Image (cartoon, rainbow, N blue to C red; front, side, top):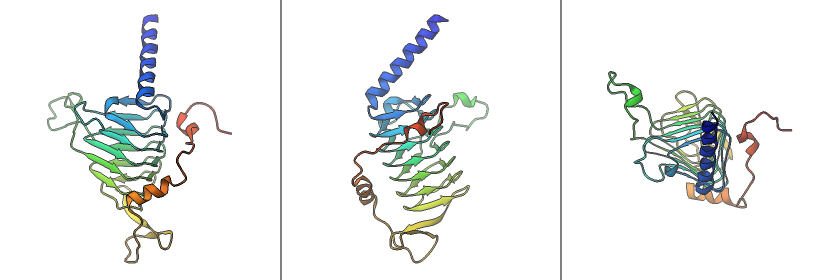
Length: 228
């Protein structure tokens, strides 16, 4: 018993040291699980909420198979599983219990235990900068979500979404887009719509006067205590 506990503590310290070396400016909440650490890249001043799971299934994938940008906040219990790649842009925010499902177990032969069949590797998920995912939102399959999008609570995104879109439902549908002349979300579709700035310009605007800002780490930490 003492030997097993000692080994558990040693393993924990090794994991902490590895994370500090690989992600020096990233906050990890308690019980975050990283699988395929060498294939994961997370930008500065980002936070990964408690009990989240970042999973790169295949070790043969590219070095940056999972990329999370700068100034991102992934809420508690976020789940990401990489097929070929997942890219999440700068300034993205997820509420609790969101999932990005880029891989599944192979099920071509029901006579073989699915536990042993391996996982799929042909899916890419791309999320542009400054996207917000409400509680329990899911992204499933080959999907590209444009910059500035808002995904409603419980939505299931299975198709590409244009920039500055508001999506709700299962499967998710675009119900509004942000009009940059009227400065408001307008019902979609409409013929009277003015497209917003391109992704590079949006990143410039997001970073203007925001070289660093405090993340709500208490919300990522979990634990037993309330916030006054």
